[in-house]
Length: 99
Image (cartoon, rainbow, N blue to C red; front, side):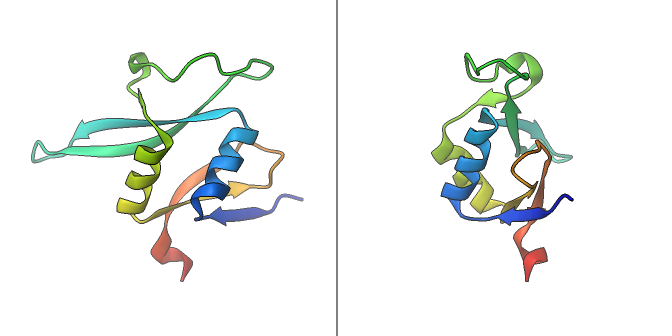
């Protein structure tokens, strides 16, 4: 049976991503007014492969530090909703939905 958890604390998010061999990334795309909007992403290594490098710009994602990624997560008031620790399933949810 799968259970979901919503992670808000930075340490919990980093630990979950690290357990799944993931790395933080951000893409920036213009909105309808031409202003750049940051979109958070997590990039994961393929099964049985250790992450050898940060995500590349080829896939539209720019590698970033955890501090920059977590600052953007807080700025957008998001949390990470994950399925139990054995699966690689997640989504970003607004923190206000948690109240």
